[in-house]
Image 1 (cartoon, rainbow, N blue to C red):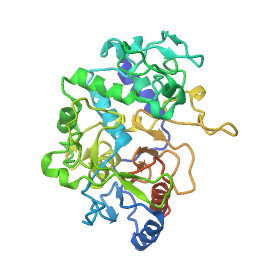
Image 2: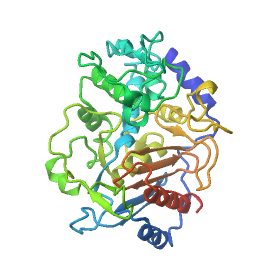
Image 3: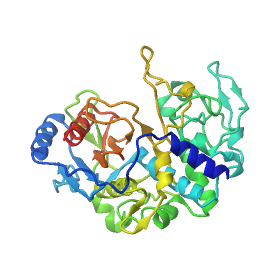
Length: 392
């Protein structure tokens, strides 16, 4: 009964009127390639993929540069990128599948499935470690309100030295559950719940329930040997000369992953991720395969953050409201590159980006594998492409 209430109440808050059976407009792509090519040549980005898909099945992709930078073979939409935090959307879908099946409730305490998670202490501004007083729920994990953070994005955690006998499976939290939006390892913990409840590791679970049914055969935590030649180069801009790119030596991982990161561990291709988003645009089903019910997909686009948690942390004047659903961030107002209110969006650390608008029925994806995160060349190229698509 509580599950039904959650769906009906929260879906009722979604006022955009999703019409999953309505096709998106047919986009005119004449001029896209020329515009993108000019911008790409100015960007300094070695290689980049761009693509969109519509609810009606129109698909566009364009690739620039070599897949392996020192070899020259042209990049294609089937080449495989490290997608980092774009993994989170698939992990969240996995959790929602378990929710649909009645195996979990979104407001269940995470401790029920992951004993010891509530014992991970909170690190105060003073440096003191204190025991949390509020239980972490699955909803907290999906909405980044559990208090877990990423060390690389938070100086307080970076300065924290874990003792040799540190007994916990993560760094300390930075806030009590439900009191703050903090980007961090929450979705990794959500992935562990999927494994605990299903009895499968995330690779197995995704293949059986998401990537397998959708024929996303270029999406893996451990890319099969037969596909490893499709993994693209990865590197970073030289700190001393931004026009110079340093290529990393380990294009193909030397060792297989044994602990699966639901927050950032996947490899995927442009075509595969477009397929995943096309399934969402169609209400959770594609080509006869359903991975989620329509009402659950609607729930994915509902802002879950109370007003008190929804102010952007990086704004001090005229702060914008932050909105986050159970899967991704939610666009509350339109922006200057065409994204409409009600759209969802996210990105990956190596400069992969996407947005999805269930009202217009159009999803946009771009992929590079170049650091630093939010590299100006990669980000500007993505914005250029999204503007071309969404202002069409």
